[in-house]
Image (cartoon, rainbow, N blue to C red; front, side):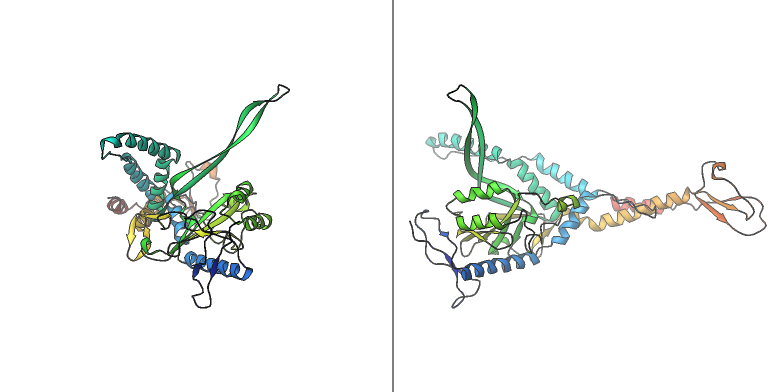
Length: 415
């Protein structure tokens, strides 16, 4: 058995947060280093480093803004108790859908051209491989999701990495007694896949340019216990730590770090439904050190330590920014750009509705000695004014006229 190796956090002569490669393990392959859990003190220091980096990245994320932008896009109508108008025009929704339609009208096409006559066959083969991966990965759908994220939030994340898919199918098998049963056949396949990430599932180094980012966290949620047990057969994972995590972790662990950013857009029903047998992992990538670590969302277990599995050595995510800000990574989306205009249009539209309601209201003045039933009034009365005096009869008061200038202002904003 090959000698066990580990990442040590050097805190004597090096900086506290510097993680250094000590030695490599040759039985996994020339390009893969696997790190097994070292002494408790070293493991705790590594986990402490990861927790601190996570907190720093989490503090730099505009989580509250994302909640606001999503509500703008949905444009839900909220009724006011005082009965006044509360129109919420779906301007952002319409604008983003129109932009998506324009983007989808120009379909993404990748063309392969042979450079030599003997490359024609290779080109056709590569074309088939490309079409297969494109279709299997639902790439068109993922690109559309990427556009939606950028237009709503100002930034969307694209992940490109190795996708592994395992499934079980059943083949008919005849037994000696003639009975036909289903024999389970487990199959696994993997390929390079690109997909749009939920903006809430990515934490990135706080830098204005992605090319300067040193490290990042990617959250992988909704994992079943069977999926975690599948890690036990992966030689890159620490079997003891995986078993300890399975034994001690609660489904959808709601620890200090896991719950901090996982509830941003959840409904009350989603918060109450913890999702039994669902677990969350955090994948940490460090570009400068070439480190890849998998831990739980409470930073209690190091399930895997190794080098970045991708030959390019960079972080496996890249941003799509709608409208860049100056010296900031997170951009401006359509919802933020339209916020002020929508506010003005909503206010003016509500004023028009309220003014129309006032203009159509009948005001009935009655004397103090006059009594009547509502059913006696044709059309109903919205306001009844009682006063003292000698007036022995009722009198209708002229309603206020509606100011047409509000319509002119709304037309200007619409243009």
